[in-house]
Image (cartoon, rainbow, N blue to C red; front, top):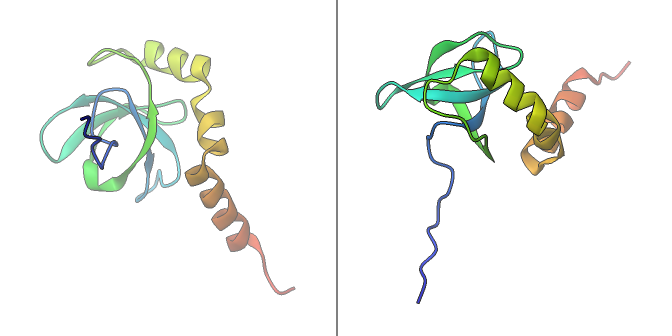
Length: 109
């Protein structure tokens, strides 16, 4: 008998996440290192490498195969090679955020 776990999106090196708060809200980032139980080091195509609280991240199902503490150039090359932004846009989470963005720009006029 095999038991399947109910939750599969864990904090791990290489996990792609969407920033959900602050000046970088809506941008995609990849977890490069786990500092402690509340903070991680992230890097991405359109953001600088920085430490961010986990509560500001929304995890996606995507995982990029990188090593712990990978350098920025390697991370960005892998992100563009694997088409992370395109895969996110095609996912149900990406489509729902695109729909939400479109609704915010609509007006009655």
